[in-house]
Picture (spheres, rainbow over the protein chains, first blue to last red):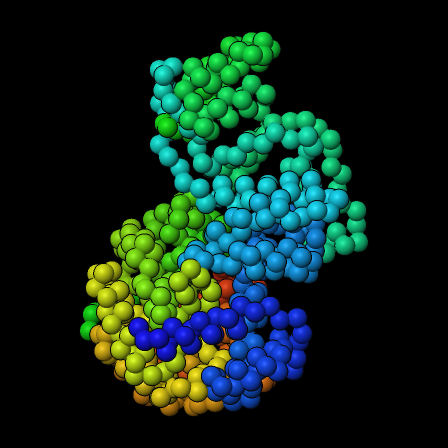
Length: 273
Length: 274
């Protein structure tokens, strides 16, 4: 293709993706005079709107679409911050660092938890990071594939994997109940109400996609360690060996491992590595 | 031209309506899906399988960006082809626009400069896409909010030249004609009377928001009377093609959405008795 089109599109993109802070006539984002002069050189005015106002509609649509995508991906963060603060303090700076680069918007927010890890320093950092991690897991599991299920019995040397529609969490507070209570109301509700209580509680939790959607349930510590081992492709023998350092866990596993495997196989939680 | 079936009146399939659709199994003629929403796996893929058990499905893409100066994305096109085979879609459509650069995707349907050079460029790529997909391929006209100083012709001539040169089909969005006519200042009748309407294989209808100074293609309202009027004028000239209502925000129930789409049938029956 000619350089003309490539140059024109590169220019258009630079104007399109620029964050605009001020609003002008008709409630449209406002370009500064220098940019408006540039736009006048390339675009034609509309029936009523000026060239810069026509361009501003594309700019507004671009940002709104991306903000809405991230809002849907991270509902807990939206409920914690409110829409305006989420857009201004999380979505916009994140998108400036990680602009969309793929045809799929599913991936748009994948880097947000690690970006928050690097950049978010306020005192509620642990809560915000945990909220982002849970939201990301809900989103990822919704779109995760399903691989063929294991068939019992299995030889001890068989390498196993956890299905990608399961995420494991080791928590020091009941974040799942907190999230559920938070999302039970619209974000604006929390502007005038205290957040729901976040109960201190050590627990292991599996978030998974079942036949009726995403659910979570608590795991015993032994179950959690076994499933974590399978997440990295361990054999049955290797997973059990991990428990040998803790007599209590080993004892629990020896008693229940048969029924656990039956249950995991029924739910299709395990697949061949 | 490729012959494609007239599927009747359809609605764009949106996740918010799935529960209602699965529970009530409405006798709707067909669904259009946003291609990109079903190129992955997980819950969307499983939901699509359930839809395919009962309904014809047509693929409508938003990310091809046929007019982008970046090379065609073959990984994306391979996924589209696989989905087309899985769904048995009778045709595939996307937009006459651009929306990406190497390493960047803007997720928007951006306007192209209407020049002879761009016609050659887009027509060649459209022909390649149609050949690769081995299905009729249609390009949809955009809602526009601006145009370029370098434009050499009106949109109807640009659109016509591309589909004729590429020998592809038209997916005619009647709401987009209206929205662009208001924003850019042309007569919508002048637009459609200059199109080769025998190439139209599908019509889109949607609602828009009228802000006075400009009109936004919002897909969150009932179809406006002005757009129904254009539909009444254009539909008979196509000899009868599949018609679809898009509704993408401020959702109403599926039943109400479908009822809005069925107004198209009233227009079709009314016209049949004229």
